[in-house]
Image (cartoon, rainbow, N blue to C red; front, side, top):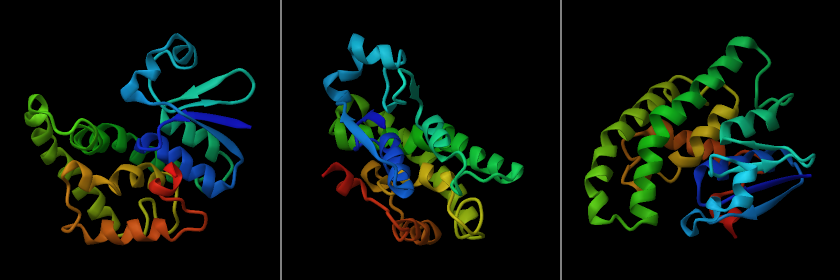
Length: 203
């Protein structure tokens, strides 16, 4: 059985939970509180020397970290990770986009606002994240105006990867009112069998 170490408030952790539920995989969840420095312990850093969540214990003494690496490991051989070479590359394309063009703006702004309480010393950083976040949302909106999901007509890891932080973008100051296709897509993901919300996962 897999054991995942993470904090469900984190989109990077929540996306692992989403896929595990979609696949109906039995697993254990171990809560790790980053704000309490629990990733800085010697025991945690034996699992991940980079001191970040999520981390997955594969049950054989080995560990896997980086959320998108975990997603790809779990999805191998399922419809969530296409076998077609180009389609699989497009999934990876969106996963790299999420890590480099989406998360650094939307997730960081959310963390500063929601979890740090928008401290004065980080206000300028928070406001500086807004343009980049809206640029990323604009790229997604343009794609979703053409296809039901990010890589075509069926959901893939690309959708799980980008759903996690997009669905709470408002907590970082990003209104989704101007992105009707993103709103439609969020509802489509929520309607999938075995979907679990972040709130339900935390409960």
